[in-house]
Image (tube, rainbow, N blue to C red; front, top):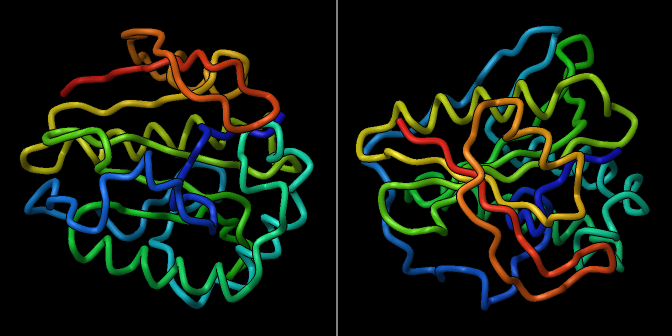
Length: 211
């Protein structure tokens, strides 16, 4: 099953709805920055998203739309390469501004490959970052989402001024909920949320880990 925390915002190449964003004036979350490269076990790496990977990312998303549609409203339409490229530029600016840190996950044995996307998002208020993630369905069941989310949680909590990491997912998305549970996150609450995609229930699990 595809691992995806809906809606993942800049994790996938399409803008978040305005109502769920903090806006272009979002404040810097930390004076520090996470590593641009995180190597994981099993020949997997997280790399800061860049324009060099736009075509591979776009192709990966387009090939996985059937698995993304239940959880992401934008997946009803395939993103164009131009959209992916533009949001890659926006993501680079957000990284430099310290508001969002977007990564792509790829196979070390296949340079340039993209099998998923992860992000640390400053959309939940000061002193905290939210982890969003998506792993392509062909690579599910290998623990990639758990390993990558764990690495990002550690990187986030190592940043000055960041004391809390959250993962949000719909109650029906069992694959996504398994990730924070395995990583020792605490289920803080179940919040009501607008239903934006076919698979959503409107009940959002909010998982928390504190440094």
